[in-house]
Image (cartoon, rainbow, N blue to C red; front, side):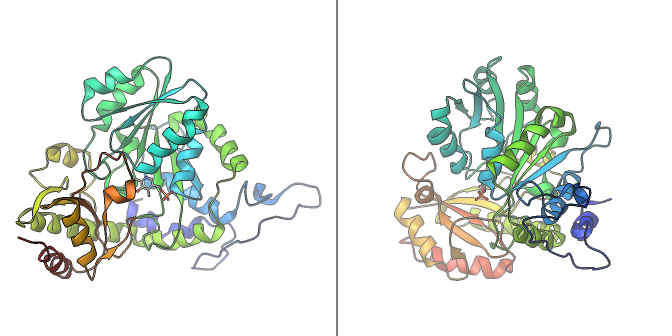
Length: 388
Ligand SMILES: *Cc1c(COP(=O)(O)O)cnc(C)c1O
């Protein structure tokens, strides 16, 4: 089935659905044994399994639209947040293992590796993933166990060639993990480009309404034997599971994800073009712009003619000017995060904290579902506040 059809029927896999058209929610933390001591559908206790979570986990692999030649099914695990998903995956590493990270990845992932995992003797290298010789120089057998990708990157929207990096990583049998939060499976399907694991912060476009936290890992079919059981154990024992209510909310949001993401991306492309022509803006980062250095690669890797609903732009006048613009918008909210139906803008360097490589005149913009003309009018009046 096509992605939109799968999404429209997101809650059909609920086992206790009966004849209800809308999905039920199972809040129970515990489940009764049969008289013979067995459990119905292997449901024991919600940390190890819950019908609302299973409905979500059963659906997620299909959204990646994995090529049908794949042997066996992919497998998905849902978590309480994107960072709980990242953390669970990194729990599969052992002391002395090494991972390669992109130079402008999500700051939470970088901080987890540098501030928490360093104490566990997990080593890391940071490279610009567009520089393939640098990636090759960073991977080392047998220590390198993972190469982490985020494309487009956060917040400078650099585009990585997933297939090319996967080729290098697989030479040393390292797993290729793609944080696909910004693109969603609607716009990019990394498992079909050679990645082994896809990670999502489902707090963003999957939830889509800035009202739930969630994370997910989807394991490629040929990696399920290596990773599936250990991730199931970590999920149940480390316990970073999503609440049934958040799973249910997500199942309610998924039927509109494709419409939302494509409309938000269309508006983002218009705003990127408009911002590029504004005299107070000196650089716009958006892979959909023909002037973007990785535009051709972005077009080739995308599953549709859309380039995502995230963009960044740099204003003339440095950090002070950027903060002023963020404080002057009226329709657009000044807030962190992304992927909701409402547009958000933020001065990214302030959020990422000291030592961030993000330029201090950069504003990151999550484009929502408002009308494009209303958004440009709001940006125009905010940019007009800058001294010419
Ligand atoms: C938000 C985000 C995360 C972290 O997800 P949480 O749900 O906030 O824990 C990870 N990666 C990317 C790209 C994100 O945008």
